[in-house]
Image 1: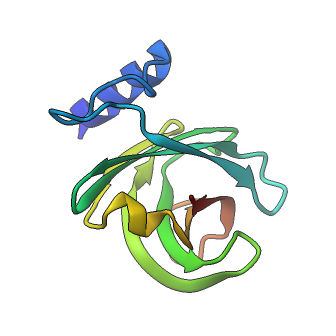
Image 2: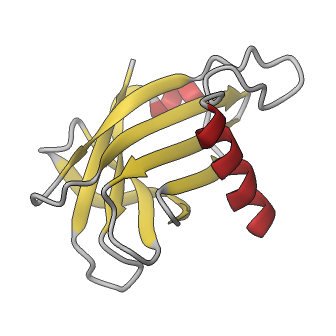
Image 3: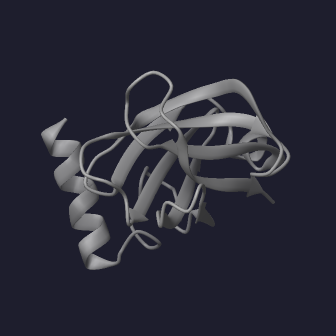
Length: 137
């Protein structure tokens, strides 16, 4: 886990997330979407998707998050104002503003307009959502 956090931090610090190759043959361009604050949290950032056939790498980069880890999930919904509580995919916790996960879903499915990335105030059950990014094409 420390290697993943270090790798994510290195990518974020160099600004190379958009050009880094994730997999052999991958152009590395990724699809980036914004993440907006919820509940006046001040947490904002980006989610970048890197497709790899039946799987997708999900990179979260956030600013203004509280100390400690924050849970992150992909949930169903047409946008951040109309999310359901139906969790589609778990993401690795956000630590120091970054998270790198692989979900077993093709990029096109995640970009279908039916999914959102949600970050919560903590990893505790019942934590409130503090940030959301709509995944769409």
